[in-house]
Length: 355
Image (tube, rainbow, N blue to C red; front, side, top):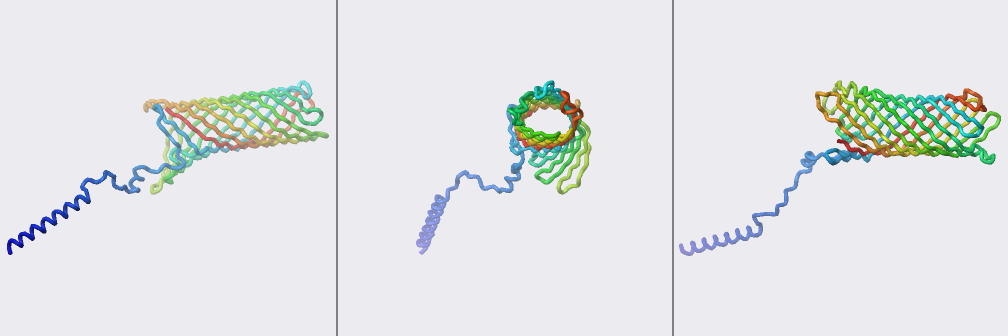
């Protein structure tokens, strides 16, 4: 009896051990080294998603390369006043002209900022331009009233601007606005060739004309910009707005080269000494710019920053002007004064490399 009970107990123990071994073999102790699934929220906290409008950047040869595929839009409602003189030794022959123009150029620039938000800047500018040109052509081919013309021109102008206002709205809904004195002087030189087709009709002191022109312009530009005092307003969600004063302790010097082919159409009407003209043009172009920024705070020991950038874009402009001839139109020497507007909008994409 006792022996039978012991035998049954041993048999049950053996069955339990066999069952345990079979379970271990069916579920091995060392599993595949597949990492456990991670919480997406935790991953997003460690690696925030890239903002849609942020530029693409990369470290290259110790510097930073940057490309912004979202274009920058510049709107300039320009107005001007011009006085011009022209000498035409023979009627319908070659002529030489010179002019001086004063312009008011408020630049309004809309661009994505580096934080992935939106930046708007407003900069008032004043410009003084001097221009000289030589024009030759055939004004009236076989009595049709249609003529061709061509020539070259050279221009030099000086642009002054200050102050500058900037407004930033970032993806986290923080907002800041700043204004800096930042006085700047820009000198620009242009040399160009142009040609066109012009038609004109006139009778009893009245006349009207229209034409199309093509110009190819080589432009070089230099800018000297001095940092100045400013004020900054900042508003962050969940905190009180702040206003601080700051000083831009920098000086920047830049040089640029542009190639600017422009196609335009124009129309004009003349009644006695008065002339009304209007036109529109499209100007694609490429600009290469080299800029060096220096710190004026010697105690900070900030090294100079060098930036090379390429900007490619297209400008659309319109023009309207009213002028008056100050001398009789049949004289070989003409003198005229005019006022007008030439608003334009430019869309461009930028790439840069900064060391």
